[in-house]
Each structure stands twice: as structure tokens, then as C-alpha cells.
Image (cartoon, rainbow, N blue to C red; front, side, top):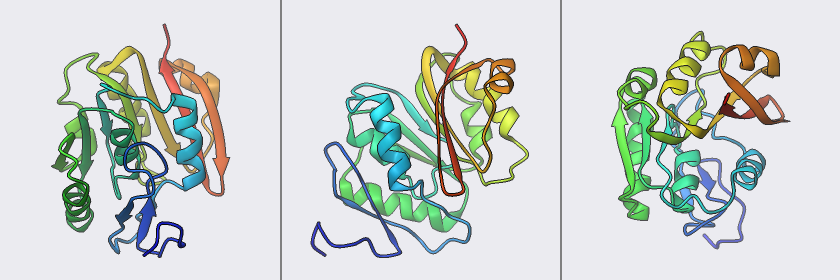
Length: 191
């Protein structure tokens, strides 16, 4: 497939960095929804294109699009957590295809794996749990404990999170956008 042809339904394209235009396979897993290109592009414009040396975790990796985008821009290590066996195999295949040794893959519950990090050890966390998940507030609390004081948290949801609610949970809402059903939030711990 030429780099300029349209994505097939089972692929997502990396937008920037060293692997720009590389295709990631998307396994046929029900309710797997890769973060839309527009949101990924905007998110990495907000964060900056050079993430060299950032320690990241993609807690509900799915296709791994967010984690691969971070690694493509120099983040290392990038931890990808996924509980679904077929989605996890897809992550393994994409990591092998790109020879992405900086990606650390673990199969299991994202919340439980996130709790295993040392306090203030991550620069960036991607939280994109299944929509209508009941664990958002718990995920935000655990993330706050493992984020560096000037770290970033990307939160994807099917609803907009109000700045006041996030403030009460210990976060400053830095930026927010919506694309279709997806509400994207970029947060930092309150100083």
C-alpha cells in the first residue's frame, strides 16, 4: 500500500515522529476504538513533537496508537497495557514490525498495572478506558500518585469533564476538545 493511500478499516496511521506514516494493524475486537487522527494530531501539538526521554503509560492501549505516537516522538520507555488477548497480540505484532524496543507491553488490567509504578515516576499517562466505565475517578486518583509534579495526563471520555470537577480530583484542565463522540482532555496535577 502506498503511503498516500487511504487507511483500510483494519489500520491506523502514525501521524508524526520517526514512524510517521507507518501503519498499525487494528485487530477485529469489538468496541476497540482507536483515538481519531484529528485528536492525536491536536494532542501532540499541545504536548510538543519532541518527547525525548519521557516515561509514558498507555493504560488501556487497544491499538496502541497513543503509545506508538509518543514513542515515535522519542518517549522511552512507553508502557502499553491491554487486557484483551487479541488486542494484546496486535500490539506485539506492531511492536515487532516497527522494532520498537522502547515499548514495554503487559497484558492485564490497566488500573492494577498502573498502581505498580513508583510515585512521581511518569511524565505522561494516556487514559482511554471503555466508555461508560465506572473506574474514571479511581484511575485519576492512581494516575495523580504516579505522575511527576509537572507531568501530563490525557483523558479520553464520552463526556466532557468540567474544570471544577477535575480540580476537586487534583487536576488542572489545560486543554479540551471534542471530535464526534470523543471528548479529549489534557490535564496536569494541581501545583
